Amino acid sequence: MPVLIRIIDGNALTVSLSGLSPDETAILKKLFLMSDQPERPSFENPEPGVFLIHGSQNQVGHFIKHIASHPKIPVHIRTALASRLDNYLRNDYKLRCRDRIIDLSDRTHIMGILNVTPDSFSDGGRYLDQNKAASHAKEMISQGADIIDIGGESTRPGAEPLSEEEELRRVIPVIKRLSSEIDTPISIDTYKYRVAEEALKAGACIVNDISGLRFSEDMAKVVADYGAGLVIMHMKGTPRNMQQNPVYDDVIAEITKYLSDAIEKAIKAGVESEQIVIDPGIGFGKTLEHNLVILNRLNEFKILGRPILIGTSRKRFIGMVLNQDEPARRIEGTAATISLAIERGAKIIRVHDVEHMARVAKMTDAVLKIKI
Ligand code: HH2
Image 1: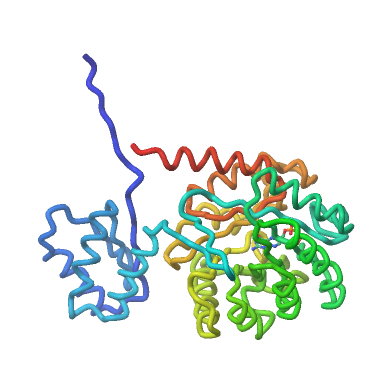
Image 2 (image 1 turned 135 degrees about the horizontal axis):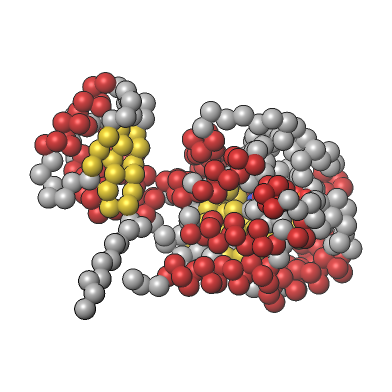
């Protein structure tokens, strides 16, 4: 009988600490060498101030517990390490929005895009008419949409800002109508607090702020007052200038820091952690390479402890890889990014092609859920 060899992988973790002082690095090294944990993770100190811990989830978890109770490690490092690891491993997300609780733990949720605009990059002009918008929302729900995201202003690269009055005129009647006709949660895609407030009054329950609380000081307060869900998205610059040579030292570190600060800002304004979703903002002040790195390393945002939303649908970076100018022909490319993003921890996917992407998500979920 042939010998069967099975290599079990996929649970390996690397925890990286940087910015450590020489003393802190020395203490960590010492604790590592002194640890009597039977199967220790391995460690590396590749450059001054940087300390890497590699191992299985169990090994790393045990070691972090071990140092978390060690008085010689500064408290901020101990608590940050323990909570980041807990966050990284958690999967039990619930999103609270007004009187609803959306359980994100059992499967990937689909946010269907409804652009009530004349000029969106992919579906501009198709749903400006209220009847068409309502029937498209219902069609997406029948295809598997869990949330309908309504936007009145295109934020494609180079787009001119829209007046508040015009944005309200486009979205409010559609939200009023849909909230009386459907039970599916409605989110409002806006960075203007007045539009968010009117949308909430009209029946929306989530605010999707592409500026990540940056453009409107009162946004977090409105969300807190209504107990609404809040999507905090990262964008570098503004839609008008964001694609003019965006530069990052470390794109993941910068976005993580931004999102972390924005979560804190929301919480200070009275928003509860369970109302918050985070989104690294694919295509918003990012080059092709930045977008690919974000997708590849999406799991790193899990340390923030909030569910991740991802919006790759039909976007230009997919067209760049596939050499495809026509957004409607970027469906397979979108499917690839969606499946990968789910594997890397995305809990909500924002898409145009609900029927197809709901199937992609369901299939990906099935593979990830199987007990091995
Ligand atoms: N992308 C777009 C708009 N809103 N919101 C979140 N949270 N994440 C995204 O990635 C995101 C978003 C851009 O896509 P679309 O709405 O299709 O285009 P346009 O801005 O041209 O209306």
